[in-house]
Length: 375
Ligand SMILES: *Cc1c(COP(=O)(O)O)cnc(C)c1O
Image (cartoon, rainbow, N blue to C red; front, side, top):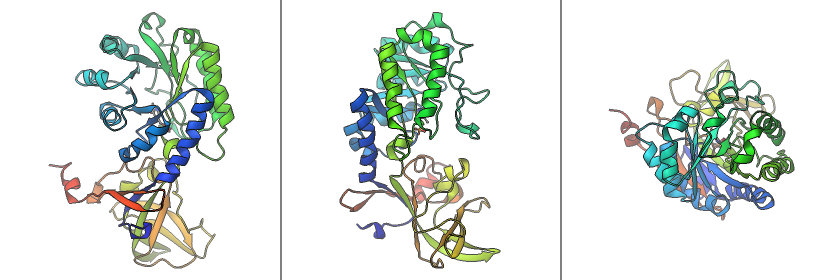
């Protein structure tokens, strides 16, 4: 079916654009010999995993369910990190994951033997205490009081037996200069123990597929750790894999005025693009402008009853009217993985735009998907 014929609301992931990102990542792999795995937290559209698997080494997960999805649908290297594992899930995790990364020495002590007995690699997350992002405490694992990773002060080298790698994740939508800065802190605080490791994982948050990203500096960082310490280097980006590779299509249901022109659309910031409110950010919208750029200004609001369910203010060449279709950009990542049925909102359908332009709906949701999670 054609893009214009898709039902709304609908997430559409553009196969050609995902592949373009994968080719950029694959260039880094080819030039450095590092390994790159998909952080499923950002993008778990497993229909696309066969394509991802052609370029990347596997998946990483934030816990058992994502790990199982990676195991079932990608079937390549499968890593996992969680702030803590439950006693009743560690056996399955040890069975289906290749690298199991612990967040503390107490978790390490508790579960390390199980993991080693299963023949899997044990990793430890460190906290280099090097904040490189400002203003975004909720996305900064190095913020004061953070629960992520062992600090130098809490580090216990005598318990490192069986640990084959260190993991850090401190970035969010950042460039490689921040990675270089973080690596300096990692070396300064934990460099002493790097020679005894087999691998190091640089985490995610590398915006590698963004136009202004400095790839040569990333590659220098990777090569430095490979050459200086003989380490295998892993990167686990989520966003970068599907950055700018998807859309959310919506239809205008009504327009009204209250000081400003308002349009109600058949989607919701709160339910379908929660990062718009959580991050917060103003999602790109095709054929629209900033406030004041085009003659007709509208505040786009969602269908829920939450006053704050506002996507943003956008200007247009023509007045909006019932039935107009609007297409938001960059909606592949942190969208379908985070949506909810709050207010009884239906979940958007999920579609693929194939390389030849043909669109295919791969999943639709209805009332049962809302009801099933309640009782
Ligand atoms: C969130 C996360 C990632 C992926 O981050 P992106 O910003 O999507 O690249 C990778 N590793 C860990 C441990 C994470 O928490």
